[in-house]
Length: 306
Image 1 (cartoon, helix red, strand yellow):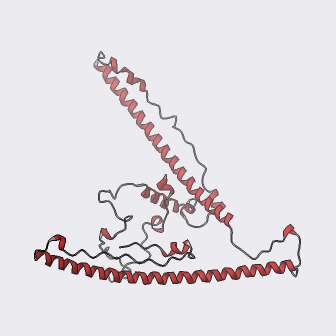
Image 2 (cartoon, rainbow, N blue to C red):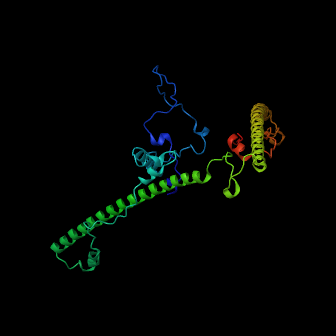
């Protein structure tokens, strides 16, 4: 259920036959034609996008099950909102059917397992009795298979109902969260006690001035935050450029060291007398800024050393 609960539907999942939004230029002269995929070195891919060579691409995984489920729900009028990112309405949620509790149909007879207790007395039975016993065993196995198929179908239906109910609960949770959070507004003046007030009263004027000062302070803080973010972005770009130059200098030093080391080895220099390999420089870090919020860090992302 973890794979079903954490799956996020994308446009590609719900519309697998639709082409990408931005077509690649191909060798054909027809506008928007697709070209063969550019070969990419697997070592350059991120760990999440690398595929185990021993894995089976045709394996029916939980992710593929969720994609099939998403396509099926998106094509229905009553379940399309479950895979949509828009806020669900009460009318849409009311269309979700109530859970159905099923049981084994009476037409499917339960197998008679007491026939297994007759194994000890089979040695003295004649051929006709043994043939009849084999036919009876075959009949009981057929009943057992029918019972197993029915239970499997009921289990699949119950699991599907649990997934749909869980998706409905997620939509309800989103709607409830938006309802509880509400929209921030500073346009309403609440008078204590619910009694009327003159808008020219000193209390109302003071409260209005306090609201305007708070709004101006918020705008100043917002502008300062934007300035700090721009400064941090420029500093990050400058560090990246300087880091690239440092790596280029280090690569040139390593190449010169390898040439010198090979020449000295050919001249008979001992290994302990060879020059040491140039140390890889450390990546410069930006100046610590305590006044920058975590949101700025999340938006700008984190750098990984090469």
